[in-house]
Image (cartoon, one colour):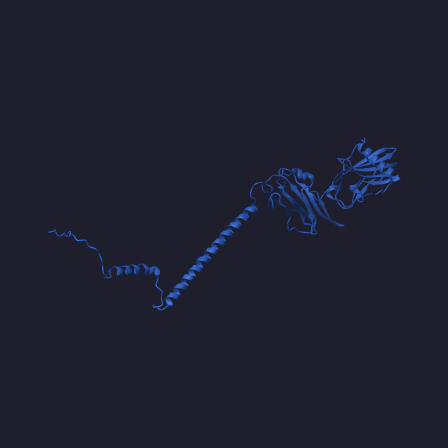
Length: 350
C-alpha cells in the first residue's frame, strides 16, 4: 500500500512540475557533450532545505527523473537504470546518464524546489559535438538533386534492398552516422553505430527499414518493399582519428509500370543468348552436311569406273532420250486396213 502511495505521489509531482510556471529568469542553457557517463549539472547556488528535484526533457516536458528527500527517487521507463542522482551536496540535483544514444540529444530542464527561497531552475543542452556546428550548417546551400554521389543504386519497386557505405577510411573509426536526404529536405539521422566502453552501440531511427552495425563499424540499411518515397540520397559520416569522412549513395526506385534496368538487361541477355544458340545450331547443321558431301565424293572417286554408279542427275535425261529414239527407229511390221478407192462393181444379171 505504501508503494502505491509513493507511485501516486510521483505521478502527481510530475504533473504539477510540468504545469508550474517558474517566475525565476531562465539563464542560457549549459552545453554538454553527448558521451557515455555524461553529467547534467543542476547545483542550486544558495543554502536552504531542498524539497524536491525534477528533470524533464523539453519541449514536450517529457519526465526523466524525480528526487525527494523522504520518498527517494523515481525514473521514467525510458531512463530507468540509466540515470543516477549524484547528490554531492545537499542542494545538488545533478544527474549522470549512461548507455546514451542520439535520442538523448536535446534540451533538459532541471527544477529545484527549496525552502524558504523557492524554486531554482537550470537548462542543459545535450549536443553531439562530433558533428559540424549548427552555424556552419546554416551557411550551407540548401540540398538539391544535383548533390554529388559516390555511388548510384537502382531498385525495383516492391523489392528488397540493402544500402551499404563502402568507404576506405583512414585511421580508427569511433562513430558512423547514417543520414538520409529527401528531395528538397535537409539531412536527417536514421542510424548511428559507435563504440563505447561497454562495447558496440547501435541506434536505429529509421521508419522504413532496419539499421545494422558490425564490429568494424560498417553500417547498412535494409529496406523491404521499397517505394518511390525511398528515392533520395543516403550519407555515411565516419568520425576517425584523421577527421570526418563521408560517403554518399543515391538511390533511384523505378517508376510503376516501367521496365526496370535489371529487367531490361535480362531481356537483352535472353535475346542475345537465343540468337547465339540459333546461329550455333545453323553452323553445326551446315558443317555436318558439308562433311557428308565430301565423304560421299571421296568414296565415289576411289571406286573403279565399272563399279561407279551412274549419276542419275546427269545421265538420266540423255539415256531416256536415246532410248526413246532407239525405240522409234526399230523396224517392225505395220498392219493397216486400207479401203479400196474404187467401189466394187456388182455383175449385172443376165
